[in-house]
Length: 424
Image (tube, rainbow, N blue to C red; front, side):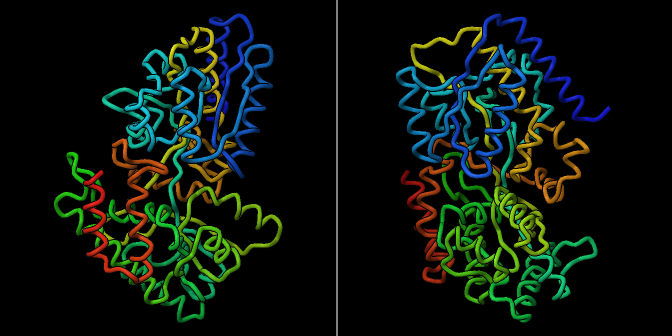
């Protein structure tokens, strides 16, 4: 019996549970922030759900603008009882949402009804949606950053291992040797990095802090103890790569992708969400042979920053959700979780373990190759100041861009960042 058959069977059981609770058709109001390839895939999953639950449950979905606009609308809508029945949410934003009182707890009874449990999720992912021992969302995926690489260029330069991965992933010295060898081979940019966007570079920098067991927030203090030194270590390494011409300078997000897909950059650090871009270009015959792997170990051990798309239930002020509506919402969440193999084609790593353990997922590349990084994931510190488009991102990004591009001393940047963060 295949794993996916078991998953489908579990979904059928959940549907039966719902049928026993709700007699009339329920319409579930859904908000998400998913655009591009993400949006295409989620719309397909919603359509599949509606077809499978015809006459019982219908999802009425709306896609809103990603980032601050989405979260601001959720906050104001929940305050007047006009938020949706279910919505996508970033795990990194949950501490702020809990403080604002705009999320309902996903109770132990809810998890039982959905047929989901803590055992189905990586510990870091489960913890990312937990506050004081309570769960406030159901993780759909983890979406970390990875190292994309041009197999053709690296092969020509003799820089691929026998299993087709870049040489030098095991240490800073080895990886820098690979970068320098690529430069000597005439590659314009050995590494493409989003060095003009400090918000994006937070992901890389926080990953490399994690490789030193560094923490941004310790007992309410930012960059306490030797954590400032660990941040300085990272900024020094990355600034050095820029100065030596090993990574691109003042490059924004679209330009970074363009450098890689055009072949001007042999490797690129970017999110797994760019996998569909590569897949589509290759299908059209417009891209070289490529791959994606976990970030190289630059310091002590592997570590990668990740966030999770998750499902949350708003706490609509003055608007009680009926048992029938809640049963419908839980069925929506459970069905999407258990059928998230399609979501993996967007590059994301499904959070629901039985999907990533299935034979179908293990045959999916490059996802299956980089999925090992889930053992080394780190999430944002648990504070209302963290998360997508949050104050921590804003403060740090101000100093990351000039530092990475050689215009500010790393030690000075750390002192400024530390002072501003603690002023928050």
